[in-house]
Image (cartoon, rainbow, N blue to C red; front, side, top):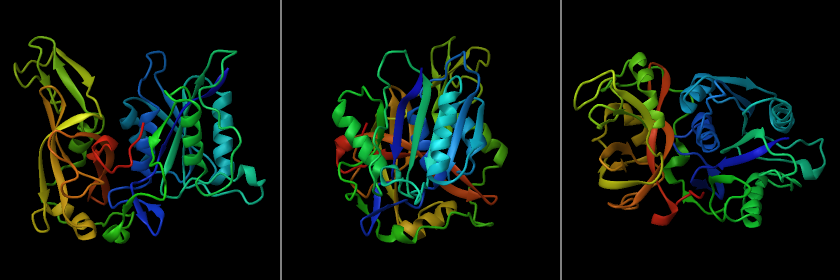
Length: 351
């Protein structure tokens, strides 16, 4: 029996007049990526390719981006917009074979359908479903059940399933506050940069596109190289061991995306930022940078998102999310940023 075996939901941490809005470093692709990576933790050797069905807005760069995010070949299928396209994508995936994912963004209610089927995902958010084989006779880990009406049905379903099955039986994960009306006031984020990157920007640290693409495994998935000869870890990956310089003894391994410990923090004020971050600073003001220990002995320097000065402190644990960094050559570049976890204070993260 095929079923929805896991679901993940994502909304930004910011609000404007009681409605969730994305920050200056978020867009449909980054939001879809945050939901999708929660339900795609492991690629089985028997599945050389995965299928991702997109309902609603097609996030660019969905095709190549999803492949890099998931670490292997991905077939991306773009369906019809709206609720009808979402239901169709789920139905097709349930009739398919192997692991399939359905990613939904910007779904509007179907005015022709009964009220119980008015599924509305907030325009600033995403949800992802993992559909796979489930043993006959068992209860599917995720059952959408009766779909209530209203603009926040997906978070409502998320909360209901968590209450019904503490401990994760239903497999729901996501970035949700207890009260969706709560969140960080958007302030200057209401004037965030448009979705289309400017054709020309000041590029003080220009990175050619081929070099950027070569580093996506480390930038997006925190892939490191462990040397079987000397036992040391090289991060980011460089194609050779940074200790013994051997190239024939490297084993790729993914580091944890969440739970790293903050070793140092700083705050970049207006005028101190690299020039490629000018647009972000103009829109949202200064931003933080932290050094995070991903695991003992392995560190990463990450920009901070969804937090103000003093909200992320030394020895805090942080999560990471894929976000926009800056535009180069007329396209957005993406990388991981550190975000606060609920255990440290105000946050939009829950698991």
